[in-house]
Image (cartoon, rainbow, N blue to C red; front, side):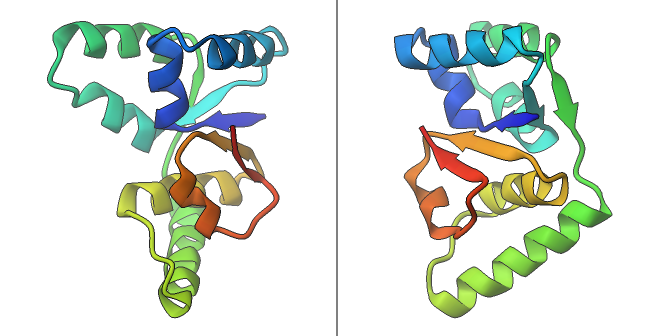
Length: 124
């Protein structure tokens, strides 16, 4: 399965042709998930229309929870990135932790994820 980050969903909802094509391809394979952290980020948007579009999109895919395994992976990433002086924001750490704990590929448009040295983190 493939986890899609908040940045990818935002660009999909905005109609970015590259991302729309990618999401359609993944959806046809049934290979599409997001995290509960992404759900939170999307649903706190100040625009009611954007929140509604996000809710409709999220209703069509699986949303992965943040659990103990994800907490451990996120904490491990935190320590590694802090020691390297390459820290990323907390929500991104949690999203990456969920992906790594579940052995999922994470697709993002956020260049900050490049600080994480893992082949399953893909910047598109």
